[in-house]
Image (tube, rainbow, N blue to C red; front, side, top):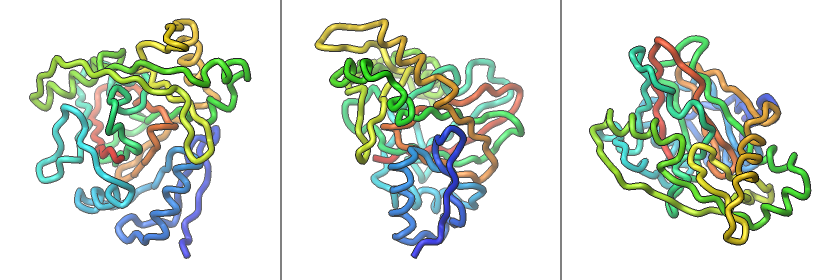
Length: 268
């Protein structure tokens, strides 16, 4: 019997998992972590002590690992991407201006989960901002819920967040002009809970019965950015955070004049 316990994050966004050592996971604990993800969308596991091998093994216990499009992984660990912010960097950090869901512009192989591990964490900077699609959907007016029941979003790698992706590609020595685009329902259901799938950093259009609706697009983007759906997570070195890309949007907060290094794995 697992003895892990949880406490919800601010605004009921995600949950902290306590009494857990990811170096010695049991099958029952893995199942419980997935159940918590289904309910809360994101889990925060504080101050773990994992190397690349054990970090990747934990990710494998949750599903099949996915290589991130057009970005290179660590040597010997191709599924682990390095997200590094340097003191000399001047641009917006890691899509910091835009909530998003990873690779929503893919038709297939979108990750179900994204996982980050804190490698080098600046003090009082570099939080990750999470927005709950579960909570945002619940608070929509009934007429909006009815209106978007069958709506589709057009998501593109050339969306507002693309500048950040191009910078990461350049660091990896990758040059790509291909624009990837996909169409997905903007309402998803995860274990009986409905969630908004908006990804403002990639969303180009919202279509209802093949007609574009710019006003609805703006309304929904403003909605998921409301403070009541947001939790700002403060990192410490060794922390592991896992979230469900169908129900949780995220972005990094602004970082200035310091180094921040995270290791990312995506899982389907």
